Amino acid sequence: MAQSSIQKQVAKLKDLSQKIKEEKNKIEQRLGKEIINQADLDYADLSNDRIKILAKKIADLLKENQSTNQL
Image 1: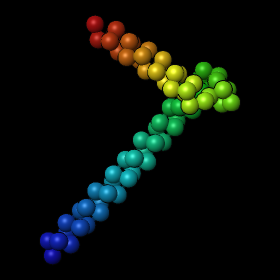
Image 2 (image 1 turned 45 degrees about the vertical axis):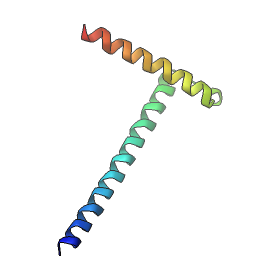
Image 3 (image 1 turned 90 degrees about the vertical axis):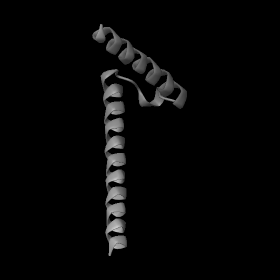
Image 4 (image 1 turned 120 degrees about the vertical axis):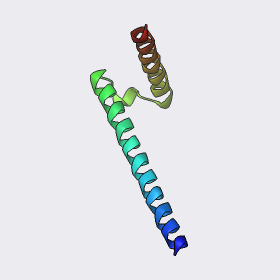
């Protein structure tokens, strides 16, 4: 009986974990899409290297803004 209860809890945890991953992916996709739209970027110009460079620049700006706001 206890084994069945544990198995059900494990199944619920796996389901919840999957839902969290899916929601995280949705947020990441929406954020990327919004940045592309707001910056008026052309999808054709977004190679993997270009995406990494842009992501680094955006992250640096956000980090700088956070540290400035904390002062």
